[in-house]
Length: 380
Length: 229
Image (cartoon, rainbow over all chains, first blue to last red; front, side):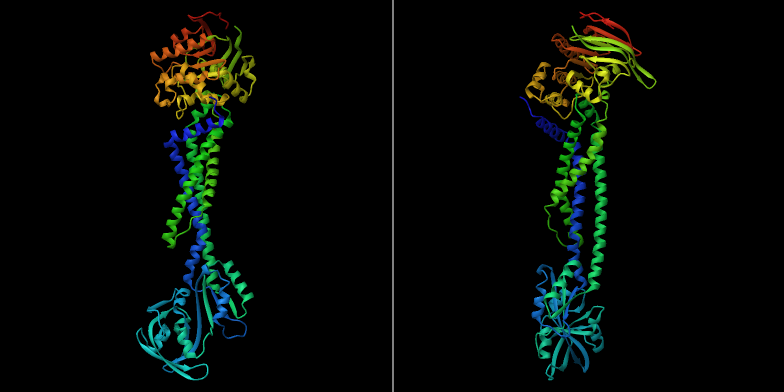
């Protein structure tokens, strides 16, 4: 029964891989470990901006809205129009602020009306001694205010002032917490927006809105441009201090991962090449025999390449899967967040592994084809 | 019988070492020739030149009408594949292929693998029932018989055997010699390099090499041909 040459070719390759499995497992491990490190690092490289973008949100708001032109305030409706230009998934928090001058013990202070839960999201770096207010009638006071009027958490105090039509008001609050930020906020007292609006006697007027958006510098620039063009009532501004430092740190981190990935790729190539060279070197006798039997150099190269490419493909597949596990472990331990599997990494990892293994095989096999078959013939 | 192989004034020089010196030899089709000689006498060099694995420094070697001393490496590979069956002292079987597959490898490089024909070749050397065994599962004698089956599978013009019984015990030596006798009877030309006078005795002629020269030609007990060195 005649057999196709290709059938015999595959039979020889599979027999070599299966029946020399201890040797081949070593080679497969070398390829798979290399592919694991490579695909893991590539996954981390591409996931770092997302991971770090969320991490950077702890630096505080990176986008603020202020009244447009000569206006002194804007409405919540304008904020909604503006935030329509930000993808929902990227919004970490939107904190509206309204400021009024009030008096405590006849001393003037600036009171900020805020939505406490949103402030927590946009300013996660605030250090609060005590508790965050949850209800109306509760207040958070800055460290400076606390020092000045000697109030501690649990103390009551009375806020007085004049509303928008000139009538005086008086309102009691309980100190729930004292806030330290290292900034101007320590001179303010914070109450709920509804309390402040009630004291001021009008509603729907905002002075500033702080937004925390998880996006790259370019995406933020685009959001600002679109809001500027489409929403007349507000002027969007990036908090350069935050966005620039984010960009700089991100660029350095990516450069570091890129460097490590490149070095890992080189080490992988060296490791795989060394292993394949050892595999080929120990089969020089076999190569000599095949030449003695009449095999052309091309046939021998194709046989070894076939084995190498199979190992490369399988190693690349294993590497993509193990690499994801590796990246997931790094992500969970370093960033505390999970990453999603990128299916396109499988063909990419297989292709790179095949190329590396192919190259690693080709060079020693080509030199091995120079083997003099007479050496094999020589008796002892 | 017509001439199969002719060596005319063949010399081989490696640097300052003269491995072969003006060797003249003719081998007819169907002849069984033994080559003997001490180590360093030029046996291996002569085998390599006849087996198309080396070229002479001087002189000509004509195999089946082709002057192989003038061929390039690629042509020599083709000639070796088409005309020569090689049998080695160390058998040189591919250890991850079965006995059958080892025979089929020679077919693969020659033309088309044919499992049935390869199995018949193994049956001819008495190994039909060991076809699916790996070399590590075969005795030395059985491995040598697989090597012989591989050498025969492409119907070579010349069988070249280098110490074919060198690694075998007496019983297996006898089995291998019986196969050679049968092949000779069937008309195959055989050249055997050997140290063993008993093996050489089976040949029609024995060429004794010393210091790269043909020292003498001894007629074997089965000789039916003349000496022509």
